[in-house]
Length: 188
Image (tube, rainbow, N blue to C red):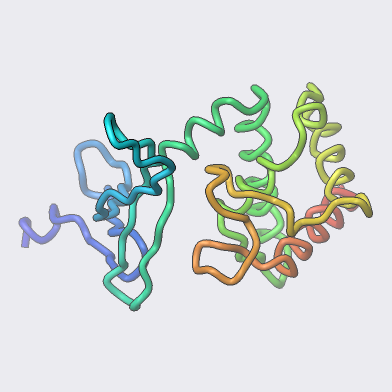
């Protein structure tokens, strides 16, 4: 009985293998993705090394689709964005949580897509220091008529954010997320 009590529950029904840390001495949850290297080659010189962008590819236990992403490029691009980028992403993720805690219908917007959405906001909008004003400025930027979500990239800039691939989002869902964030903000 004691051995089972200390054994961590593992869930591999999603893209990652989720290992609960509820019984660990260091109680943190861990997501593990079993992946292999994936490369997009840009040059094939006769002499010398080819130039390529390194990514990863994996296939979840459940399902038949392969998933490709570029975590190193994603990380580098996120770091190169305005200093307020990550804080703004956290604000919008927390706002989704607040919305879901206080409304009958919840938003199932994945955190990855929120991060990609905010990545496309220009630095001059992100630079606003007051958090409330910045949240409003970001929403206002999304709501401009001239903004075409179809032009948005993922943070890695290796793929468009919106489309029909398994790693892409739906523009209608993004517009709903923005609309719900605006409604919640205006009601505060």
